[in-house]
Image 1 (cartoon, rainbow, N blue to C red):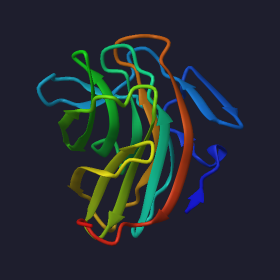
Image 2: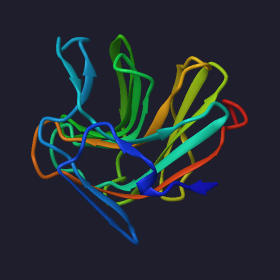
Image 3: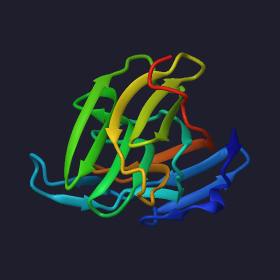
Image 4: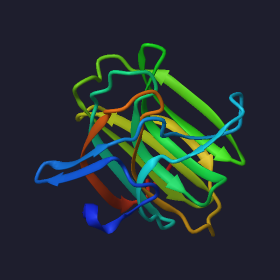
Length: 193
């Protein structure tokens, strides 16, 4: 496993503020930022604050952050981008008063899946996207607990993909996410342990 230096990536859209220290990177999202395409809501948002670097087939990217959300739709995790209409965001989102683990997979139109996770607040969440063949497998865990399968989604093996940490604050100003690490390693050996 290799740590990725925060300076390696390029921001898809500049955050309000970025602070890099020995214990990680703190990113302040911009109010109204989000990533979504059309489905159910009818709008397109393409201004997630994502720090992206090349994501090769046969590798996995992991992003860790401290879960400290307070408002509707606060979110952070890992973002994979092919282009404006093909991308995936996966991680934690505050939704309707609950902390949920989920993913939005977008191929022209977005779809959203999520499930509540209780007891994760104030702890370190790690989201892992593993790229192998024609798919990306997303898993997540809190602290040293076991990995949970979040999503398996199609991903063109020939596509040029970038990936890295992201955050959004669709409903408020002042969301600060403390990212503690960004790593790359070999892709998972298989879908099932």
